[in-house]
Image (cartoon, rainbow, N blue to C red; front, side, top):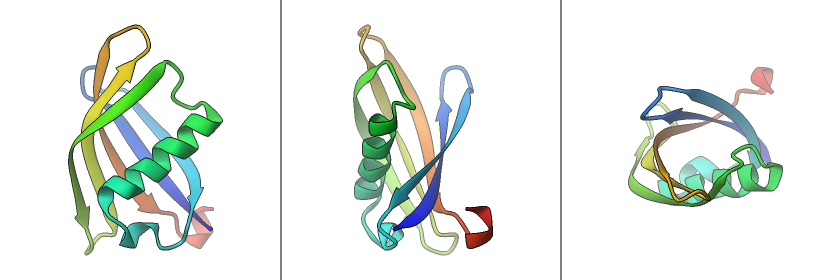
Length: 97
């Protein structure tokens, strides 16, 4: 397992959250959608993002040169509202862990 960081930005408010999570060390080699799924599953388990019941991904891309995965999507909240977001996932260096 390796340590990763996701920066999640709320498109409406500009609010930003930084989340660390553990995932298989080959996460960045997987598809962007699978990487986002790994993040969301770890976040849900730790209840970082309380108040959402589901999410959809509208775009996902990988930047191998910079080793960053970026996704754009929508969190579907339990109150029926939606929160557009952008997420950037990267592997933490050993000294960042």
